[in-house]
Image 1 (cartoon, one colour):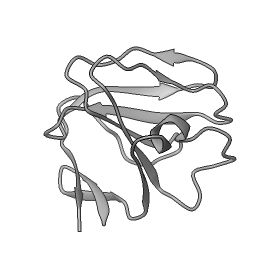
Image 2: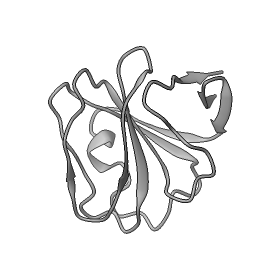
Image 3: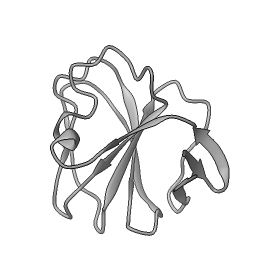
Image 4: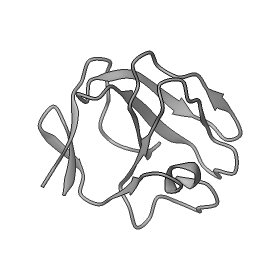
Length: 110
């Protein structure tokens, strides 16, 4: 399985964080390795935080259809407001070479 943005592959190996695993996400890790991305499933009014994350990362909030609603570079030890209509947050390394823009479509495919 892989993650695509506008039909371009951007992650070949990702961590699908559901249920309790979504509470941990990037916390206590030294890097993204061995993953290229993390998918966090969010309740409509949940905030994202970067406490106990030791590096910067890019977060893209999407709705159920994968449309990007918000993009932010997340620094350590901060809270990030929810996006209206959010369903997932895709987290990528801050040094990623691709650019994510509002309205892009992110999807997971086999």
